[in-house]
Image (cartoon, rainbow, N blue to C red; front, side, top):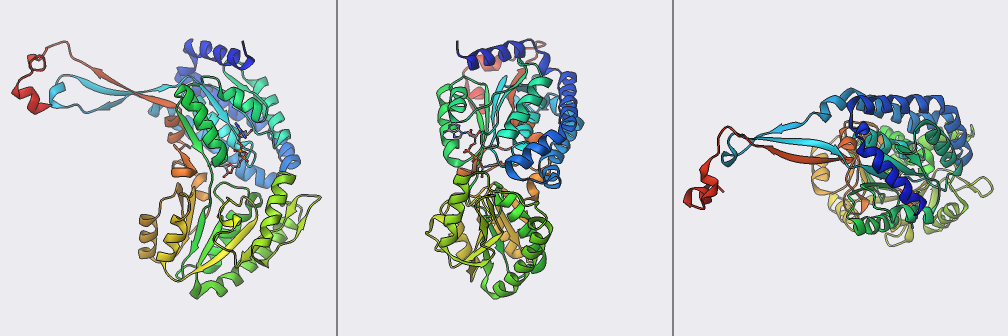
Length: 450
Ligand code: NAD
């Protein structure tokens, strides 16, 4: 029997013992996970520095603190969420009670990417634990030090039959996907998302796909331009642009373009002083990813930045102009610190540029104009986003986070994580005090009611 089959079956057996379903057990495991993460913070910081040159401050802000916040939120609300939901009934069901019970799926498979390798392995795990599941985690091979650290920490803290980490690349990932898990939670690229969904279809396994895409940022002429520039620089160059919800390309009203670019230059200069010059700027994950990005620099005119260092895989914050809408840069998700800028005359132009591409994971709009805000939010489909900010919508457990169309399927964070890893089981509790004769007769009355 394959090792992964053994692992899955061992977890399934443990799941059937029923322990993972108990509230006290779930709360204790969430608390334990938080303690284990805290105890090993420096191990994760070191691994993130080695794999991505991620500074401690950035690692805390974008990886660890989000996990602590998510665990605290789960612990606070879990007892309420677990209560069976009572629902109304209809006239034909008089005397009965409708109840929705959240039941864990069983054994979940979590496949994680490399860009926030700690956060994106543990955040789904928090949902799996809260919902009462067992879990197998497969971290990304592209951040090997983090992958090792996650494996050492998790496999020492939790019994194999409850939570276990399997390291590996494509081969291991596909071998895991060949197993009949009860739920799959995948975070990664659109292309691999399709492979995962195909594998899930073989067993009809329900799944969440947290994918990527080209997320636009729109700067309206009524925006506070200095603040817009500051917040766009934050969201775009964080993690050197290797963020699934980073603004991918920028659309600015032609009336304010020059003024906005002046502000953007100022903010990039400030960012470089704070991060790049202090050695706290994240590097590109691999040589292959680096070469792909450097090639993009030829697809337009560099108006800010453009310098790179092959040895250290560093590419400075860059802005491009005069990029063709049909270039590779505008077809693929950039996933790096390059921001192409385009001007528009009216919202119709904006809508057609966005609609020509698959539904983005995020969309950002900077404006003080409520009419523009309403029109954009009503007209374009995207996973989620912000008005007058970037990226921050994913840092609150109160907003479901996920894509739509090619940017993903399903959502998580906070209650939505609990929901994602739970099946909503519908139960009708029927009265035995009386038995209405009407349903046994196919007559006019029942036909009317039904
Ligand atoms: P990826 O799809 O290459 O890899 C993700 C995981 O899938 C890794 O664990 C990898 O080992 C595995 N994998 C790779 N190829 C596989 C294959 N052929 N079969 C089975 N498994 C395979 O993604 P990545 O490069 O690690 O991450 C970047 C992508 O992820 C970007 O597109 C980004 O937008 C997206 N992303 C999305 C979110 C989100 O929350 N929506 C978050 C982070 C990243």
